[in-house]
Length: 310
Ligand SMILES: Cc1cc2nc3c(=O)[nH]c(=O)nc-3n(C[C@H](O)[C@H](O)[C@H](O)COP(=O)(O)OP(=O)(O)OC[C@H]3O[C@@H](n4cnc5c(N)ncnc54)[C@H](O)[C@@H]3O)c2cc1C
Image 1 (tube, rainbow, N blue to C red):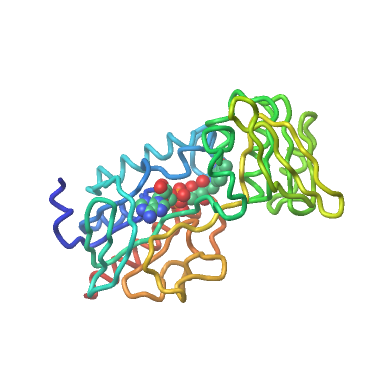
Image 2 (image 1 turned 90 degrees about the vertical axis):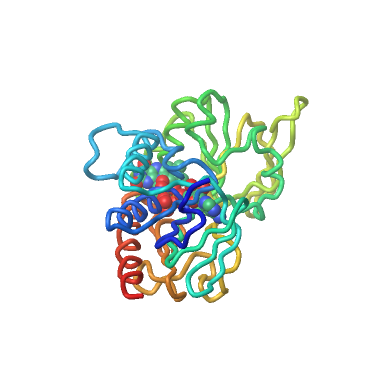
């Protein structure tokens, strides 16, 4: 077991996506002891991205996993320790106490960089089809499917780019949208929606899933506003709009906005002493990797100022 686990750390970063890795690296470079706790592998969402778009300064065609590896490497080089664990509960007690599945971590300051995760309440049966045809990640899982349905708008820009990717590998793609079109850049959407093998069903939502004779996802039931239901045979369903902020238990309700995102005063400082938020989990995040990295920088600077004033 790591030496750092038993001691009070300067900083605990929860979530090892680009926001958390950036915050942790910068804190460690300033000489602070830092652990990044992540329940999955380091890199978070980047791990599922093919070619990174809209990330200035990268040479052409850098993939998400490549960028994740670079961020992880520079955090480790700076002295950050990575602990593969899920933080289940946070509690304030002079500093912060984080309960994880295996141990207890204590730190003067906490950076919450836990991103977004699936909302299992919008289509409860989706969870039981995980690995049997339902995915939150098109680029990794569906490289070989034929006929795919997606639902919802999600972060419109990424929905459009993911549809283009799916359309390049699938026989046909049906996009099911709750409104007329997703948010985000409309020319990118028009390009995706205009592809010959992409069909768009607007003002609709997926309400039920049915399995085929092999126990895999076989049919998706789509309810259209004022137009009744239709049943679509599919080979895979990619959920893109049912995402909610993730965070450990123990945060007072006032820390969260109505959507469950972490409220901040200046972009990264929460109303809880010594707690900072960065990346997709914070209220107002624009959900681009570059802005998550910028949040990580700001959170580290704010946390460093907080720790040095103690
Ligand atoms: C399909 C898709 C394509 C995209 N493509 C691009 C693109 O091309 N260019 C671009 O700029 N942006 C893109 N984005 C957006 C970008 O990926 C995200 O905005 C960014 O990666 C978010 O980083 P983050 O660090 O805030 O969160 P995440 O990367 O989600 O990291 C959060 C981490 O926290 C961990 N975690 C959560 N809860 C806990 C807990 N309780 N305990 C421990 N660990 C926990 C998770 O395991 C995860 O690793 C895309 C998004 C999607 C959905």
